[in-house]
Amino acid sequence: MDLEGWLGEAGVTDRSNRRILSVSLDTYRHNGWSKDHQAWPRSTTLLIGDPDRTAIQLAAKARQSGPKEFRPTAGSAVHDRRKVSDEPIGFAGNASTAMSVDKLGAIVRTVFKDISTTFVRFPIGWHGGAVDFDHPMDFLGSDGGAGVGSGPGLAVGAALALRDSDRLPVAILGDGDFLMGCTALWSACQQGLGLLVVVSNNRSYFNDELHQERTARVRGRPVENRWVGQRLDDPPVDIAGLARAQGAQAFGPLSEPLQVEKALLDAIALVRQRHVVVLDVLVAAGYNAAAAATVE
Image (cartoon, rainbow, N blue to C red):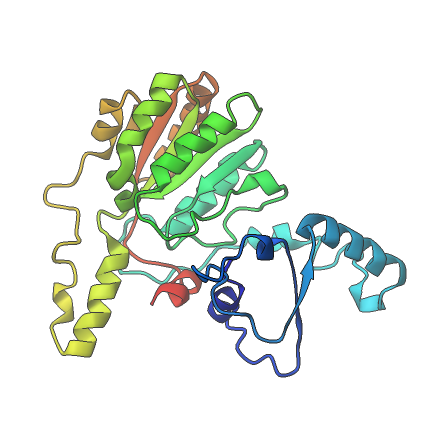
């Protein structure tokens, strides 16, 4: 919904020699009073139309009569993107020996690569290239409002919508997001929905730690106090216990890759039997470089 903001986050700031074609139906829902169109994107031509149908027609036209460089061939970067995504993903976090979020992403990619899966949500810091999407239902996207705590409710809603399909609903949530809305899982249990929730648990409201560090630097205060009021440790929260209290089955805390892989396979079998399953996976506090660039 915020094309100009997205382009800015992607680093597309100099548009003097390029034009952007925006294919969208969003203008039908824009409201001048609430300004939900956000900032108007510069150097953009608006084409009102269905994005998927338009892209299909443009691709067909390009293959027939477009410039040679626009005609994809076997072995091109487009066809080889899976090979690229199989490379190890860099991680820029703290010096902890705990598993990185990127390692969790690699495990998820391996386990679900041949399973018809709908990923409901990913946590902040998740690498966008961790999992390949080949269908519009492979990933439902963000909540659109950056609301911490919406993840569990969105997961339950997705599981309800997918109840009679062959798709496996999977939500990978941050621990802060899970804690603020985990009672929504009771509804999924009460309705007999199949749902898998993986909690990427760094035992912190880590995004707020980064905010507090930035504020401390601006105000000349000690950055080592950034954890105050944000760290979810000493004692650690019993994520699995909270899940069981809602009627779900739960595993964890898990800290070793092999543990996580086995637990995911066991959880998939349970979800197929219409159970709600929660995995508590301990990860290092930190974001990969690409994700950190959008939040710091």
